[in-house]
Length: 150
Image (cartoon, rainbow, N blue to C red; front, top):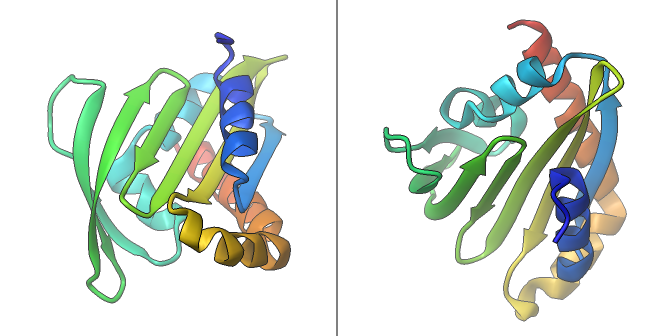
């Protein structure tokens, strides 16, 4: 398996037939970009429009169970794997991921969003065709803005 987190996320996106996957270069240092991305409790509600809260238990473990609370109060548990340059979040229905690597004084950043059950694949294809690229580019634009504020 590649040690490049962005390359690993790209492979995962292909395997999941992700509705949302984009990678771009952000003209900010890796530490600032990943610092914002890895701050899940504070930053995810700014990055995901339908998310009101993302509660992550304290501690140093790279595996945690977080609670996502949507704008309408819907709750879902997410298994979170968080390591330098790598974040994978999975619920029963959804997989989300972010990856970053330093690149020429900036950061190559990638974001992934996919559904898990095969039953949701038609919905995923429709979303991907209509909004996936636009939504993932907006996510990266917002992470760049949030990182610039740090």
